[in-house]
Amino acid sequence: MIRVEDLVHRYGATQALDGVSLSVADGEFVLLAGANGSGKTTLVRHFNGLLPPDEGRVTVDGRPVDEDVVAARTSVGMVFQDPRDCFVAATVGADVAFGPENLGLAHEEIDRRVGEALAAVRMDGRRDERIDALSGGEQARVAIAGALAMRPAHLVLDEPFAGLDWPARTAVLDRLVALNDEGTGVVVVTHDLRDVLDVADRLVVLSAGRVVEDGPPESVASRLAVHDVRPVAADAPP
Ligand code: ADP
Image 1 (cartoon, rainbow, N blue to C red):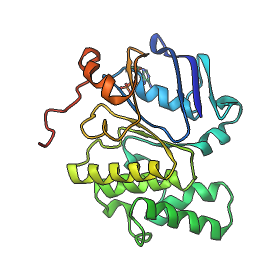
Image 2 (cartoon, protein in one colour):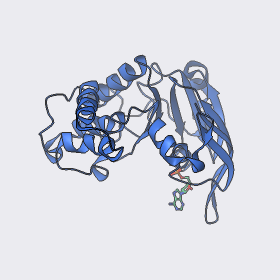
Image 3 (cartoon, helix red, strand yellow):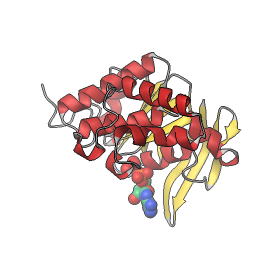
Image 4 (tube, rainbow, N blue to C red):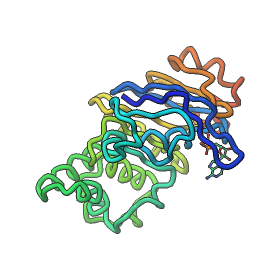
């Protein structure tokens, strides 16, 4: 369980989060939408202690994130917008192994986790391939595998579909749905809700650093335009 209470975050004079309270239960599939600059990225960076609160508090499984960042990062896996910036190794297997290696796990356990994580994103058998030779969709799936190898309770993805074509997007979304079916909580930050409304349990909308909608996607969707969020992008396929 991720719990955010009265969270305020400022960048100098900019108040990016203006008193956000929100809980994400284990196993939930949550969409976080909102116009550009509404505070989405800032909010999720608080989920695992990448940013410290100016006011308010964030707990993961009841523990304040700033008191136990390691526990928070184990429970909440984060996949950033442009995975290319985040790879730490040249090959698929070495990159996915990086997190578990840093946990100091035994070789066999690292190997098992890498195998499971790659299987979960349908990249098994491709450990030795170079990441820079993969397609954008494949790179996105390797980035997800890297987070999964930590066996997080929640997987948080910031704009995971950015730059992906429709088949790659569908492949990534299919993997997220399958992971969620198996029990991993999924939080997707996206400004592009085309095909994700149907698969999520809940849609949270931010506007100017505040939560302005929070409910089942089918009931929130009709009010999206009010908050400057387009439910269907202009280039959506039929
Ligand atoms: P979103 O993810 O919804 O686009 P962000 O969380 O990135 O929103 O940004 C929220 C607000 O904080 C915006 O006004 C943005 O310009 C500002 N902001 C974000 N990151 C920084 C930063 N590193 N320094 C200064 N201002 C920032």
